[in-house]
Amino acid sequence: MDVRESMASLLEQSLGKTLENISQQQVPTAGGSSAALVGALAASLTSMVAHSAGDDWEDAGSVIAQAETLQARLCILVSRDAEAYGEARVLLHKAGEDPERRGIGASPGSVTPQEERDLELASALWAAAGALVRIAEAAADVAALAAWAVEAAGIDERADALVAASLAEAAAFGAAQLVLVNLAVRPIDELAMRAQAAARAAAESRSRALENI
Image (cartoon, rainbow, N blue to C red; front, side):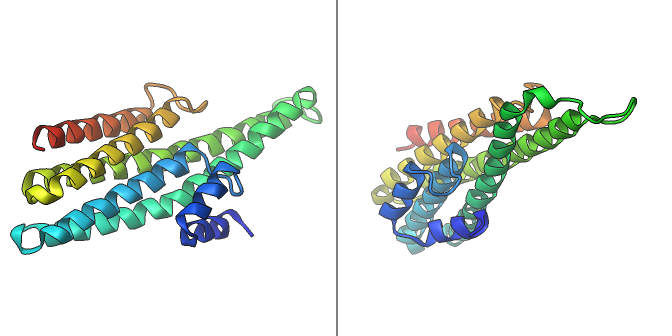
């Protein structure tokens, strides 16, 4: 079973089984996949709040549609992150195993085998960072929706919306931190700046939600 099939199976399992598989790393999940799952849960909770508000909230239908779209996107990103993380982890392991073979068989002016491996590893790490940025940005969008729900929904739904905003902020912050520690990403790179912007936006949304609770 490949990574995508494994992750599809993970998402279809019971919550208890999913948590067990993550803790035992039955599939190549890590912090990024977990952040995406938390973001998806926050989106689902935001949708629930909007459903509960019903006719009392004019924009509830729009929020439901957006929340469900973000939930689906984050579920896809669970597998995308696991796939990218799994590939990068394998290449990092290989790089650590084979330090003495650098440059063997290379002719002058050509790309050495080690350089090829380094490029492959850098590409895999960059892909992993890209998936994490998309997780952070989607989670930030969920946090904004949840903050809107706190402001506009009824008093009975506000606490749940605040929980959704808090979960989404945690997902965005966690994914952003994983981007910043990625070996292929520098602080001045676009991916790093996007990740940090998403984390800040999510934090601002959660703060706004708390002010309106």
